[in-house]
Image 1 (tube, rainbow, N blue to C red):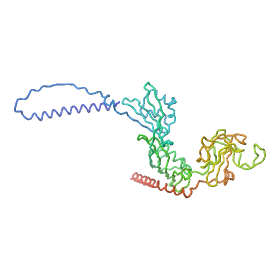
Image 2 (cartoon, rainbow, N blue to C red; image 1 turned 120 degrees about the horizontal axis):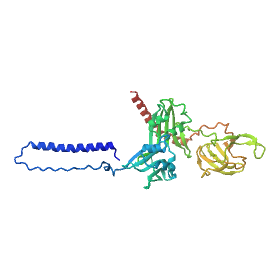
Image 3 (cartoon, rainbow, N blue to C red; image 1 turned 180 degrees about the horizontal axis):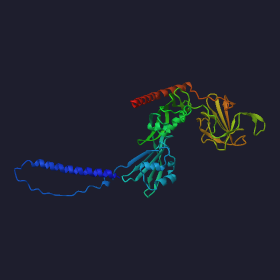
Image 4 (tube, helix red, strand yellow; image 1 turned 180 degrees about the vertical axis):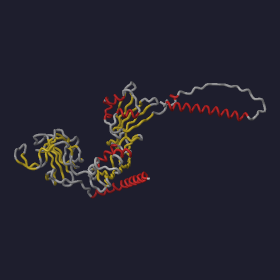
Length: 443
């Protein structure tokens, strides 16, 4: 519906136009009147007719719908989004928060987009929440969203829709003046990318204690687009963060074995080669070394560390690797052996079951789910028996100096250096833009 102020303005504009036209005719008549006719003038007949202006509300009756868009902020509720979009549909909030067909709107991801189309009367035509942008499948990259439309009977209908999403490369830079998120918002950086920066460099920078005013960041990342709208963000491709005058870098790289992760620009991995534990919440129930065997009741060497945990507790790979064995072995019960890299391998025993679809020869990444705690084999209670092996010989994982990071071999290093050379000019350009912006601000 056209706003009242706009209606009034349009009405005055039309009135002034009519007066101007009438005035123009009067001046034209006056100009002609100064020329005296040679013959008596023809009789003049005056006619008068009142013309009604068309109703103001009908002018835009067939206009295109008004499209409103907003991005989800931290702490937003569904009601907040509807308010910012200007939606006043009775029963819509109740439908969104209670109907199972709209369940995907229950989780609001900061940075993702919500759109609405309204007609000229302010009535809702559709509402769309792009909750899963950039989903990878066999057909490529797709964008999934929830779409809600009025059902024509006073209610609403919700459907999940999917379409191809275009991936674009974005660059951004920022300087911290008050907080990291404040600088990221100023740089129009999605919250998901900001959180990923913290995750990538969290082993190098304490983002709670180490940040200083004047710290800078430069980032290259993927964005997913649909119908000209950014529907979500993807992975960070390259990153530089200057903290207290020191530059920390990161770049995403996949090696010839299919293992991927973040490395600094010199080629050093940003994650430790091995996690200390394979399950997150646990306690050690038996250490490496000699002990009384709980089943056979005699002293024997314990080749691993036992972590007590309830049955069904997720087990995660402590390092990148390849599944060398998955199945049953006497004593170990359900067991997985991973060949990690070089001389290292790891073993996970007494599992209740394995991760769905995991097979011998599969590549797994550090932290990937591989199975669940159980009590199979020679186990008197649910726990994980974890072995860390060097050249197939078990060693104490709690006492051994674990390798800090996996080194790139000659072939991978060449490919890595080529990748760095691709992104370094973009980082240099962003650094130059930052310097120029700071110089302008100081003038």
